[in-house]
Image (cartoon, rainbow over all chains, first blue to last red; front, top):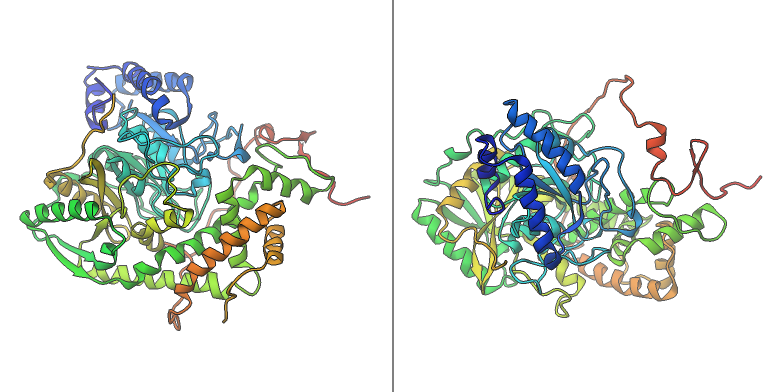
Length: 484
Length: 100
């Protein structure tokens, strides 16, 4: 059974010719056909293009030119431009859009021989934490289809958790890779800002957005990050020498590892079951020689506010490009240009997207700029400085990824504000730009709990190495959902 | 600086116009409620002493990113126009902006 293998195991079988790329792809497509009607992870399955890519990948392997992931199927969040494949951001305003070019991350995945099998569902323009803000349909959690997979990269998380693909790509602006990874019981990694090119990632919050992988193991996530990373002249925020080197991945040691536990992560809002699972994992790591110290990082409490000013402000500017002129449908209204643009945007953007555009426009408007945007950027400095100081004394800053396990779809107890407040553990890494990974650490009431590990800016290699060692030391790590 | 305790319906209408969002009266009222709820949550950063803190506009600051001024590969015109809702003679078509 190909689908249950890790990416590393599958790539190994492909290299040894125990399985052909086409056979692996066919099993993957069959699994999508069989289980995706229950979960709705995919917006678009690109079977024909994938068959062509599988043949090219097979040729790479046959010619001895394959890399560590050549021939492995890949699912892609539908906010990354894929040449020839629809890209909608789960929005009606991009319905029918077929990009004429590949995002750099996609181009790099293709040239490494990964086979793109389809585009996955998300909260519209990546704005949300449940994947319910998709304009098309919600995605369901394989641990229980009545529950949300988290978001915004819910489709990509479910593709991997439900064993439809070994790997998938997400984007993370405030936790959109790590939170769904946590709620679906898999690994989700947000690299340091600037290590993976954002060229062709449809921008939400440009100073926060980062592409990263979902996988079932840290090793798979590390290999995928290595493929995605590297300097890109097409993204002026891309760092030089940004390739993530994973050659030392398995050399991590836990003995003497210094871990900070901010008490602000362990606030009253954390569910008792999440707390218990995390404490259990912490005890197991103490036995391996990890040293834990409780610290206080008070700015964590200001993260949600700061994020909900900065991200909408950037979004209100970025989403100005959707005007019914160059791409997407147009709503004809009135006779003038502004009438057409306003009708197109007013009728084709979903409610949450319009709300964030309104918040951002207001926060940037004359008279309020200093009180909101300027001040939020000062608080962002405060947060980044606090974490930077902590990383001088500690190897990692650890906490829960999400204060709760997967929650019901259409929950009446959770309004949009409650959903927004869930991001407080993941937001600091976007504010400070540092790398952050969620790994499964146990179950609470039969649902996965994620452990969040943060490292210093450009400490991606060390963070992955440590996460790999921690993954191996945890008694209750990755588990399969109870699914067909 | 003082921040407003609440935002009026006229201000919501003004912001929607700035953002080029056509909203009907019911939507404007919904957004008024939601914006006021969010602004209420934003009050926690108003009491923070931010004196002397440099704003941090980016996650990882870079300086002087240069690109050589040489022609590169670009999209062909027909590829750039392919997704447009209206195009003609190699151009995007929009409603009249300036009357003759």
